[in-house]
Structures are given as structure tokens and as C-alpha cells.
Image 1 (tube, helix red, strand yellow):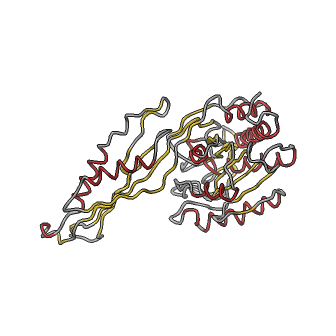
Image 2: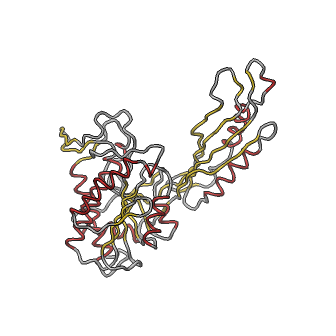
Image 3: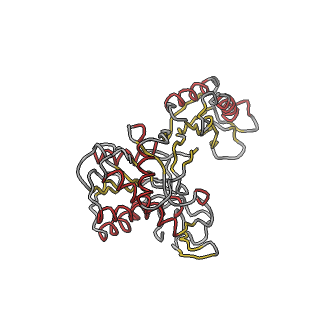
Length: 375
């Protein structure tokens, strides 16, 4: 917690994220006697057990956190106590780094105490707040395959996300002609064109296809910026950003095409260009499928209750693995309502429970006769 690794405009290549991995996590892996390597993006990969890919389990944790923002002493790594008990406090502890610590504890316990019949992979992603699958794809490229099961280790209040929405960002640029605002008829106001784009794009009906738990998809304008940044000037360029949430089964390219077509309806005297931004696939697993069976039976092995489930409107890397045929879900210690808060913390008992839950699933999925997680 005492090493900052925030999201910046450099994303996965942010020096603090990379140094968190090389200066903090890698030395810890050496101390734990765990074999490790880094891929081309700086992601860390630990592989244990037989080199069998058919029944493999990956635990993917994250290095990048939300920026400090208004949080006081965000990187002190404080151990605090109040009437509710003992907590670790710091930026990212409830979202990424608590689950990372629990995953490392579980992997070390498995390495020392279990006879693995199938492959266990621990991956530390350089992402965490980027909204794209680049780091996950890099890890799988380094492995040469996609695991059969993947725990997306992030704080979910110890619940398993049975499904989550995906997302594609779309950027629309409207161009006109600059002029002095005392003579607006000499220019072509890009703001007026952008207003037309905004009206047409937000009129797209994305609510026809509904998910029983996630409801309808959404389409939201998230940013507007214009140029030139000068006073008394008819603007010649406006850039709009749209967030299109995706339901399981939705095609991100089709969602982009619909937005681009609506934006293009605004024609002369403006020019309009659309480009797709980062995207994440939606995810969904069955309540009685291999992931949930392995998680539930693994928890029982450790004397824990069967994890509760939920559905998430946010997106992370579970969709990437599901898209490639795996069973994957977000699951880990850390309260969701603490994410990005000004007093982010995680209860120490939750860290311990999270480590035990991960350890139980490793044993159930990789050390029993039924690699699908059956009884």
C-alpha cells in the first residue's frame, strides 16, 4: 500500500505502476520462492504445477489503482482500528490491492501445501483502471493459451459476479470553420454541429434487448471538448465521447457502427468522424457452472460459506476470458462501496477470508479428480 501505482495518462506504462511491480511485487515473489517472469507489457506471470492447459486456473490481480484524488494520506498503508475492528487503509486497498494480497497468500499456500494436478497461474496485470483488455491479452499471449477458469481478483464484497456489462467508448469529432465571434456568419460553428450529433446519437434505442438481471444497455455522453481554446472564437472542432454499455451477447463493433451511423447523419456544412475507443467484452457464467461449483466447493473445504452472487454494471477482464471460451468472474475481498472513496479501507478479517476462499478454489479446481469443480 505504501508504493503508489495510480492511473495516469500513460496507463499501463506509468512508471509508478511499473516500479510497483519491479520494486515491490517481484522482490516479494523472490522472498516467497515463487517462479516468475514478465511479459512484453511488464505483467507478471507465475506458473505452478503440471504444464497442462486443459484444466488450468488463473488468478489475475491488478497493479494500477484509482488516483489519490482527495484522499488524505493515501499511501501511508495505515493499520487502523475502530469500533468495527481492524482495517488496512489506503488508495486501492478495497478495489485492487487487498485482493492482490489475498491472491499472493493463496498461491504461496498452494505452492507449499498442495499437489497440483493441473496448472495454476498467478498474473499481476499492469492494468486495473484502463478500461481495456490489452494487458490480459498480453498475458495470454505470453502463456500461449487461455486458462479454463479465471478469477478476476478485485474487491466484490466477497461475492461472485455471475455477469457484468461490457463497454465500448466511441469518440466523435465534428469539424467546422473558425471565425471571430463578432462575425459568426463567416465561420461554421462546430458546437452547433456537435449538438446535432448529440441529439441523434442519444436518440438511438439501446433498450430493446434486456438482460434478466442487468436490465437494458445504456448509452451515455461522457465528455465534450472544443477548440480552439481562445476567447471570442467560433469553434472549428468539437470532440464528444460516448460510453456504450454492452449486455452479454452484444457485439461491440455493431454498437460502434450504430453510433457512427447516427453521428454521420449530421452532414454539410460540418464534417463528422467517428472512431472506436477502448472496449471490454461483457461476461456471464452459469450459477451452476464449473466456476461456481469450484468456488462453492472450495469455500466449503476451507470452512467458509458458499459465496453470494451479484451482477455488475461495470466491466473488467472477465469478459475477455469468457469471450475466449473460459469461465471467469470478478471475485475478491474488499467492499465495492469503498472503491474510489476518500477513506478507502479493507477489514483485516476480510483479507484473511479472501485468501482462504482463493486457496479453497485452487484445491478444488486443481487437486481433485473433477477438474470442473464437482462434488
